[in-house]
Length: 386
Image 1: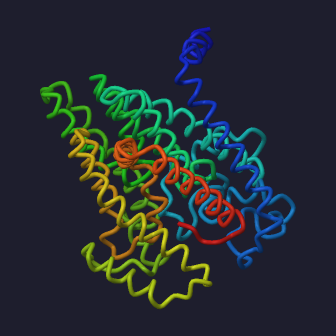
Image 2: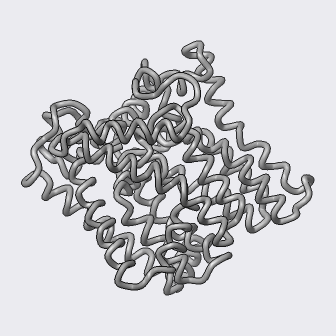
Image 3: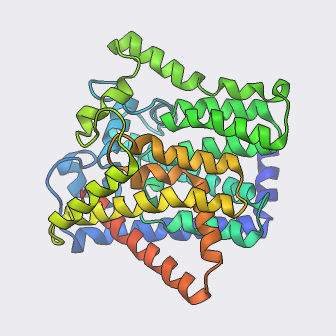
């Protein structure tokens, strides 16, 4: 009864009803693209398709959402960790296992993964709107939600990936910190760090938030429990494979583009400029490089811009650190997916676009939306996007 009353109260809010409506429209558009992509876009290779090429060919609009990393999450949910799968953190596949509607079959796991991802993303949009609304007008809150929905790689939020689950957990951690409920903030932060390694960044970010709120350590010490999720997973890896940081070391095998040590951002930009100059435009890799460089420039600038627009220091730190952490390995590979959870950068984007003329703003939003449709089609048909 309480849940029903809460749901009715939630849906009575016109802004939240609008957010849910926009989310459903987003989901329908991506579904249509997934269906149509089979008719106008050839397959890319024969690997990395959800369920294997034979199953994928029967229903690409369904199996395609489990392409690439989706297969690893399903494998972990079905049988536990195998070799070279330690890079995928446990919370999301564990949830898939426990809510699988039928059995441990591939189809059932895809269904549970899609349910978790889409429901988590829908709730994330509501929490994001409420969080932004604490500091900015409704116009900025709604613009932030729209930008997050139509960014070129946000189809990952609707796929069998952990992005939407992590986004929800990290947003809840920030939200309850703003509400001065540091116990729940620490709890959701700890679960976040067992969902993605980015979760540990919530600790320094929320310490900055506590400082900004002038909260005493006696009330905020719960945030120091945030790394427990990561430490627990590291202990599990040490006991099972003998390497507590296997999730990091495997990146050098899975992603050979990652370099040893630390690479400075200017070096990465120089590397990408050379790639663009030497890669034919007709090569499918070219569009990936353009997207990675676009993200690599934009998401380095946005947190800084946000500070000048009175964005909270905790948000700006989280966005900038979340961008730099994977980039220092020498590449923006997968950055178009990694940055999706860095919600403060989308707030900064909303602030930037709101300062532009309506015509220019409409053109940019339209471009982003069609870019999203293209990237979704590419992903469903087995092209590497991020």
